[in-house]
Image 1 (cartoon, helix red, strand yellow):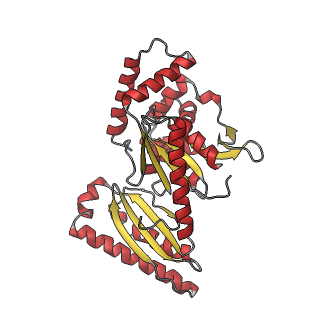
Image 2 (cartoon, helix red, strand yellow; image 1 turned 135 degrees about the vertical axis):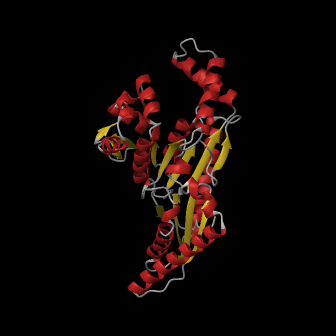
Image 3 (cartoon, rainbow, N blue to C red; image 1 turned 90 degrees about the vertical axis):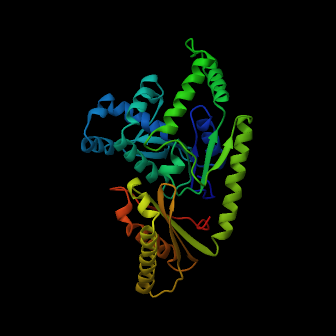
Amino acid sequence: MAESFYGVITMDGPAGVGKSTLARRLASELGIAYLDTGAMYRTLGLRLGAGAADLDEERLRARCRAYRFSLESCSEGGTPQLFCNGELVGAEIRTERAGRLASLVARLPVLREELQRSQRALGEGSSLVAEGRDMGTKVFPLARHKFFLDARPEVRAQRRYLELEAKGTLNGATMEDILRGIEERDAQDRGRAVDPLRPAADAVIVDTSDLDLDGVLQIILHAVRAKGNIEKEKSASTVCARACAAFSMAARDGLLSKEGAAALESAREDGLAAARAVAARHGISGDVRLTCRVDGDSLVADAVTENGPLAGTLVLAAVQTALASLADFLFEGADICASLDRGRCGN
């Protein structure tokens, strides 16, 4: 792994935009892990089979939790690879059957929830590149670096056509067939009710239509390294934390009303009280600044304090308590994701 800590880097975008290739190249350039989330869906698709769609929620959740994913190096100093229950995930998932089963199980909310939980666990305290369709919006909303790659449909169709032609796997498909398939996939991904394809509010959007692979890679590398340097400088004087959780869409109007504003302010006061209690218990002082707000489809709490003893504990207590105070507005069983993110708060 690299000496520099980049945290989680998310790379989202539609089919055929080159995410997988770029994510692998970026991870290699930075010397960090590449998280192939598609491989996780393919693995569970193969192991659970088409019958997963017929399981009730409780049984499906139990079956999913029987499979544990990890990133491990096969040799000393080697690149981390994806393992499932201690076994290397290999070529068996790269078949058409695996792809069809992955598409089937990816529609199951319980399975998506469990895999997202696993993906977050892999990103805790690690530097990695996570590529997919909802990495920056749903799985890693606190990621330090977010990118959304896009390209004109006709460009993506041409790239896909040339790729299949080179592999000898066109099987009679024409450019028009491939373009139609991409446009249908776009409509499905962008219009689905659960985790639709869209850029995160703080993502860097890169149009790859008129750029080659190296050109896109250089844009992303520059953005990652530039932001990393800024945050390193800021981290010397401040410590920040952010927590977020998805709220119930039924609660949106309430959150945006006067009553909602009062609830957000009450939650902020609860968070500050929690930080003061931690400080008093340990006999330290710490001026914590805390904000609570609605950001897209999430509730977000940001806290910052001067660097010092237990600074991280203070700001984490503040943001976690603040969102816990807003439990009535959250989805039932919603996770509160919280992490230290030095120098990031308020951006």
